[in-house]
Image (cartoon, rainbow, N blue to C red; front, side, top):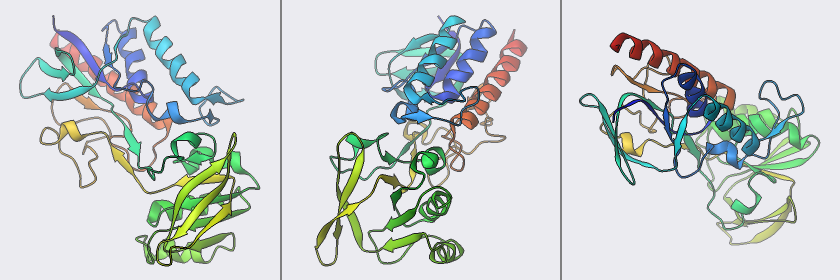
Length: 305
């Protein structure tokens, strides 16, 4: 049996697309990936999603989206996609357990934050460790935080955080920054920002939340405990597009190159969410592109009928 539409990914983009497609009676199949809900499953409280003035826990928001999609008939398959074949119709999606044929395809696999990779980091994600300053900065009003990184993202995050926090200390493992000169100048001119070069975090400590970090000077080998209430990891994101290499055009960072966020250039194949958006990376913008992709799927399938 050939599906009407398969949606790959179960974050805000994929689930919004599922809600719209299921309301059109297309009975979509969502292949969730290993982790249902995407990056919001790692987020504690979301305060900037419309209609939740008191905020909502990230996992709860994603569960509500999933239930919303299920209400209208969306089906879910908890599996991962190994490859797709869009060279002929129906399109073929190969998962870890089967091959699925579909008339239309929405790819919304998102992007994953690059983490430090130290054992204690995962323990504090959502409890003082974050990869999204624009999402979580208001939770750290009047506190002292660390930002890890040396590129434009780290500079931008640091400047944004100064609107809320008492102080920002940038931790960079090298002596020189990769950030543009103008961003470095803005950081240097901000009295709330301090910089520690040739330095790495080797351990994160605390009880229920982050209380300090053990940092190491990678030239001298000296370590010290640094008091902080928040650690923002700003060393980049990696789009989840490895299975698309050679199939869809990707830029140097691996993001899908699309038109108007959703069009791939192949009729019936659409993309949505963070795998095409290296800039905003917000739940609400991902949901928006999921909506657009679903509306284009509707037009495409109705034209096939």
